Amino acid sequence: MKNRKRTALLALLLSALLALTACGGDAQKDGGKNDVIKIGYVNPTTGALAGNGEGCAWVVRQIEDYVKAHPIRVDGREKTIQVIVYDSASDQNTCSVMTQKLIEEDKVDLIIAIQTPNTVIPVVQVAERYGVPCIATQAPIDPVANSLEEFKWTLNAFYTLDDVYESQRALWTQAGHAPGSGAKVGLLFANDADGSAWHSIFVRRLAEDGYEVVDPGQYPSGTTDFTNVANTFKAKEIDVIAGTNIPPDFMNAYNAIIGAGVEVDCVTMGKCCLLASDVEALGVLADGIMTQVWWAPTNPYSSQLTGISSKDLDAAYAKDNGGRTMPQPAAFAYAALELAVHTFAKAGTTERQKVRDAIGSLDVDTIVGHIRYDNVMNGLPYARTVLCGGQWQRENGQLVLKVIDNSLHPEIPLTGEYQPVNATKKQ
Image: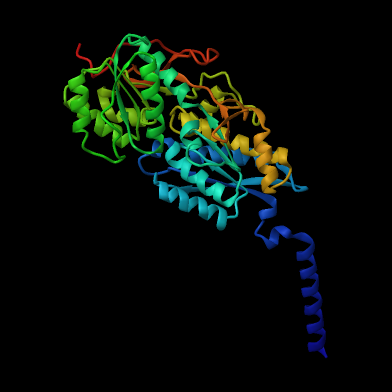
């Protein structure tokens, strides 16, 4: 009798537990997914592009914590976000594999494609193949737009390569090589998607502006022997070196060029000379190198989402990261996550098509400036972001990137003036 009562009591408790589970918790069935919006993020944490990936974990923590304190109402309930980050090891194949993993295994609701075309293009291609909404940034519009015939799920926010050319031309002008001067510009581009897109624009526009193009040909990324490039530049007596390269390629090329006795008035480089950690590796050869400035702590922009200013965000980063200035790519990582949060708040759902449409309708202020996807290139919707020209200069013995040209965006304050100092020029 006692056993029958005990069995009946256990059955009753089990029924109650099942009922409670059924009532409470869709979240229990799916491990809490219904309470969390999942965002996939592939980052070059290691490898040749690791400098671009610096600050990713810190930025993710800032936005996750903000949304935890200010949940988003999506699908009828308050939700937080979970940003799932995988390391690409700066390898394009790994980018594709990790993006597929995010979609198939982690069931993310949105993908962020970021940190140079080397990462963005393979991530975008997988997101498009699976039909997952994708926010792309920190990769010039042209190479991304040229990477596919059709874009249904991706929107990009950055600058065009015409913007880059005009920014670098302004820097050459400050160094005494204005359009029509006949200055000889030596090109240094890899034969990858990024280098090919830059090469096409620069060859055309240099000729239009009366420069003499010195083109030793595009090289395979990962090349270590740049003897032909150095000899070509030496024989032609170039005035300017222009290009975009991953840091190891530029290091090898630049050492070969200097070793051959090439002397130039200015070096303008994208990608490889954006970060202090990369240029410091060049020692005195870094003095005077010029590059793009997409974001600086002095920029007059604040986040519409969190209310923080560029200056205060940089201060917060420095406080948690040994006093280091916040890297430019980290600011774009912050902006990408801002856009993701705005997207889900606006969509009010995780339904893919509505999420994609919500991205396209954004009209918001971010830490990198105003974002509105009101342009299209080769079917890729994009928003143009700020681009200025900078120069690495010594300040109390330390290399500091100074904004020396704001001709494309006069609202950005200058922080320095051009200095005719470059280790490639004999004094």
